[in-house]
Image 1 (cartoon, protein in one colour):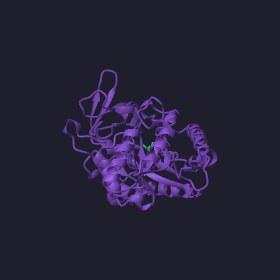
Image 2 (tube, helix red, strand yellow):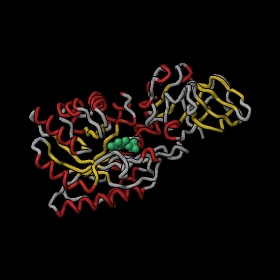
Image 3 (cartoon, helix red, strand yellow):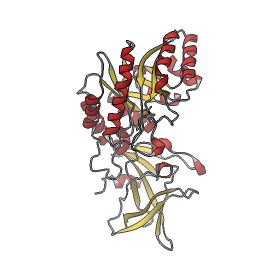
Image 4 (cartoon, protein in one colour):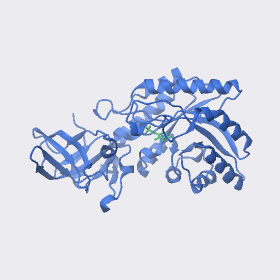
Length: 386
Ligand SMILES: *Cc1c(COP(=O)(O)O)cnc(C)c1O
């Protein structure tokens, strides 16, 4: 089954471009709010890095989610889109001084701190402003996720977070610094996680660390378990809204919260992944000696996930009903890795056909680059094309 697209409106647009189905986006946000809303102490943030298109951000802001940022630029984009500063959290292993200052000047909710030297710098910069920065410690829980090696983040070998064995020492240190207030623990184990047992493993780890703290009479206000819920790239139409009921229920069941604690989530891919499509035009069909190529006008500069992580995106010819043939779908960039898919069955292609690369709403447009002096793709909302 193919997706349904406004082909007529598409034909007037310059390709390649991103297309965002805002009905699906809003339905997804409603589902998140409904399912998380079953648990009064759950609080959901949107991970801005998945897609920071201002029009998309504004819709997400309107739904009431907070913003999880990983750079000063993202903090700025979130504030510009209207996210209130008290719902902005900021993580990242390498925060520059200006980025920390931006967060301080805007009184963001919390810095997720990833090292001792960073904690000291935040304390200094906050002191210079006469402020007290709220900090949570990002702990590396040494929990693996069954996902692509490039997108696991919670193993001891990864650069992210503070080692578990250093947690007590870092908390003690925070208590000696007058311009930081320690408010919570933060975790994030990776991305495109579909196996709930990975999240259960994280819950068990958090429970263990919390017990360790409770023995020291420390109960933090906030636990943040990051994001990582995956989407179905193989079958974008089968369940376009991820199973948020199961996701939140897993945390409700397995993570032990103490009285007064809030549980925070930072979802990126699961919010925006399925609502986005990269639309590209077939430039040439080239017959090779063993196969045929559909050469399209989008490249790895527009959607890098296949080249970067061997990621799969379902490809459909949305302007042809002719019998299917197998194609290698490739872009125009001067790199052999500029391939969207090999031996892909597509309704027979001819020059001018439009192909849809599905499930491209997350880590698509935002990762576009100007390599080969290419222009960045434009993102259109479905409601703009009506
Ligand atoms: C990337 C990231 C997220 C979001 O990950 P998804 O897999 O898109 O849900 C959440 N928190 C942090 C700290 C991140 O770096």
